[in-house]
Image (tube, one colour):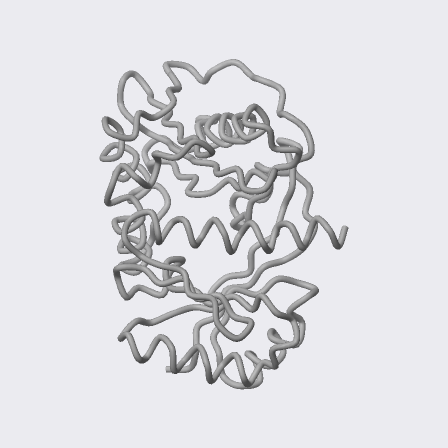
Length: 258
């Protein structure tokens, strides 16, 4: 289990780094910390610090990360993973950090059986040059909530490069020709990482979220992944459990005081 959790942690750092760097951002590794830096100052996803050396003390991380992002004028978040970052979680809570999200870390160990398409639905693999706008539009309305999340979506999917990589697959589901749901997966060191799953509000409860999640999961196995991971929202947890994902840990997103 520890090896799986370690792999999820490494894959998450790499995937979030790709989200930023593919469209002009960067990743900075310094003193046991990894800083993801986006081209927009939103703290959601594209400006996140990870502790990649467990010997870094919580107060050291807090001081270093706040100084780093303040110097470039960006807000930021901290992502922690249980149980490795239990000390960070305790210190964040004690020192006035706000817990923005608690996300079950889940894995799927084998391909998911196919199911019939929902009525009127079709599914396609994205062409980055043709579909980047459609993908962005679906994720903006179907995934994001609030200005910061919208800014993250607009930034990450501002260029076709976001979807244009050999180990990346993105899918879009349509209902009667109207793009309605989307998801993507990156395969990193043999682990698939599913993210950016969203369904337009008007098309929810029709099985489209499961459709794109299943397609992204199976695409990762087809690309050679031996296991697929994701971080589920509270609403997504029952869906992923039904599909065959199991919860193996918990990730938390923290925002600094002020």
